[in-house]
Length: 179
Image (cartoon, rainbow, N blue to C red; front, side, top):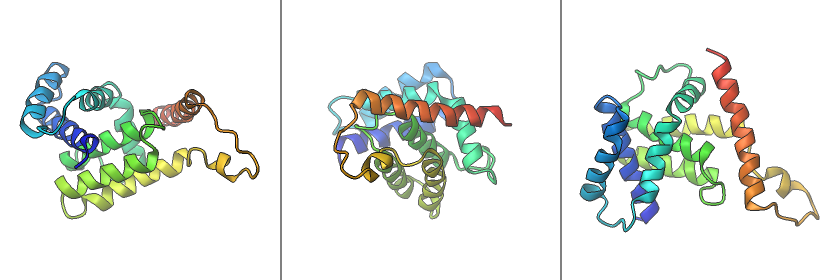
């Protein structure tokens, strides 16, 4: 198991426990330390887990609104806590992470693997469906670049991240404007 995958696993388990215990921000750091010690023996540095956990918590309302839009037939209370934790983590990586570090398809695949490992029999399909809907909504990053024949110029990492952030901001704004 790769170190980043293990970090995601620990972050997801921490999100689950954090939400189960009432979701108080002060508990998150304490729970992460405990879970890194208990489940993350192969992790040299827990900063990636911490980044994921804090990023999800910071953007929780936005992420939950996106889940409501992408899975309208399910209320948040109906979604299994494990699946909800995995979706939150996957959406955070899909919309807020650095594209060069975590391409969208990697974020989706990692979330599906977590769902298969920790969720129920249909969790992988459910997570895939929700994240796939969001991915189609934001469009495939760099698709335009690949389709331009003869144009071999590569956008800078900063420009790509900024472009992704602007596109994601529009999606988040659209999700917040409708009930």
